[in-house]
Length: 204
Image (tube, rainbow, N blue to C red; front, side, top):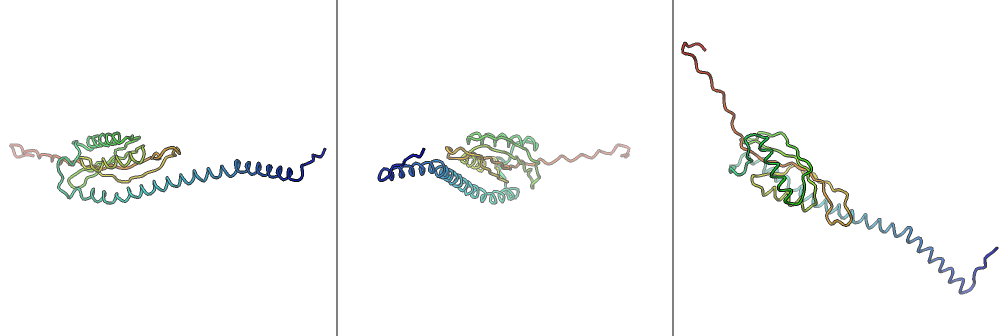
């Protein structure tokens, strides 16, 4: 059975109503999700851009720290500028305790630590510790500042920063950070073997 549609002004009003409903459906089903996705993507790009700029600033300071580390062996070093410990392992343990304390004070957490082989640098032994830190950007900055001001002297090398998936409500995305902390201990000269005294009969 054919349905008679209204004509005249009522027909035009009905046509406008149907068109408005169709446009509303298209807006809710297609346009609005696209706008939300675009907004989320823009926020994500903005966060990544800000993080990249901060990483660039930190990386730019590394060459100066490396030059200071290389020049350390040639400079007069006060006694409080070196790690305590008669062996590399003891000095490494002391370094790990200091770094863990500074990280905790900054509000972060060390998820892993790895003692690297020590190296002879002039009259000193260079002790290295590779660490991985979980925390936000402020936590990283406060930790690096604490290391820079630390006594004994410490230096940061091979800094790597990766952003973790962040909740949209968080102003600072969580970071996965790894870096090497370098410090020095005074190298104790090895005792030389004492030659055996000759016997009374002159025989060796």
